[in-house]
Length: 403
Image (cartoon, rainbow, N blue to C red; front, side):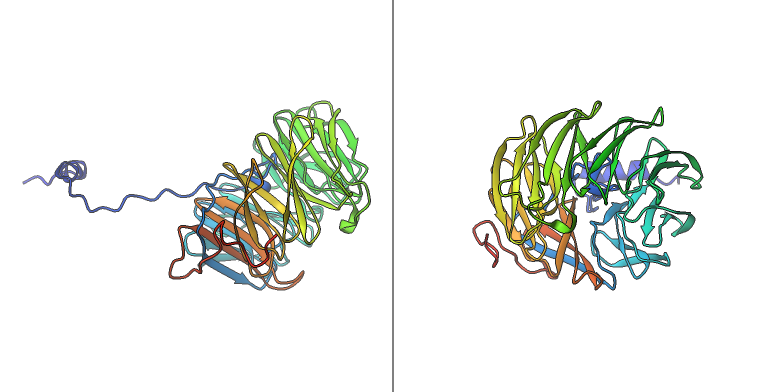
């Protein structure tokens, strides 16, 4: 007698209305680029956790985690002991690691099936995620390089102050443009790369088709934080070295094609500023002070919409939906209403919070105990405590460091 096909058997169960099969859980969206995307807006796929919030898992390693992790195919990718470590997104359990020979000192970039990891010795390592081994390596990369893969080309700043384009399959250099200043920070939109970094406040725009510099803009700062580009506008903050106050640090909005200035935001009191995120109606930028301030600045005019105090420095705010999430140094993780700045919830983070990634209902927080000490990735989820978690403050139960 012929056995029923799998399709027929499945249909019979469904018609009977008594299926006991567990529905497949979709894999949360990947977060493959620093600050969420190549435009560096800080927008995340989300969703983020909603109160009440609990700690789902925590992975502690020997190395400080000074950049938010990357997420790819259900894996969380983070620094290990001179290595790259892959964690299970659902549980935080270590899955595998690849030795790198030096400590990671830059954000990770993923272009499946490869993760690009840059180490303190100026080497970018191309790690095959399927085979879990290094495929090739590229030397001479600038410290803290934000390696970027766009339209089948890998871009990285060099120690000789060039923007270099490489074949992502083998690392072979295709071409380069001399910039003349540090090229550790890169944002890309359409066919233009916007580059800058340490040692100066100059932002340079490079047309990736013609391989030529098309404009440059001096922010007047000692360095720039990672620029962000969205809807024809590039946002860049020129800031003081070593987070010094009183140095006329500013947030500049420029026409992305011409470099012409649209507006400049000068925070009251001239505090040292930090990184920022770009939302639909506002840019969210904070101070590098403890306690700190988070400002919401209108995208079209640069006018201050609101400001809110936070317990610690504002480091790499992130956005999903109508919520802005702030990793606030020793002040933990905060979720604020993006329209009003009202605090929705806050929770403590062991160590010094360095940034957050939001995907699949989780907030993945990077932290470190000290500059060169142990670090951690902690996953927070909504829906109250579970067996492995502890209850954290809801909006009407503020954290112990109330701002």
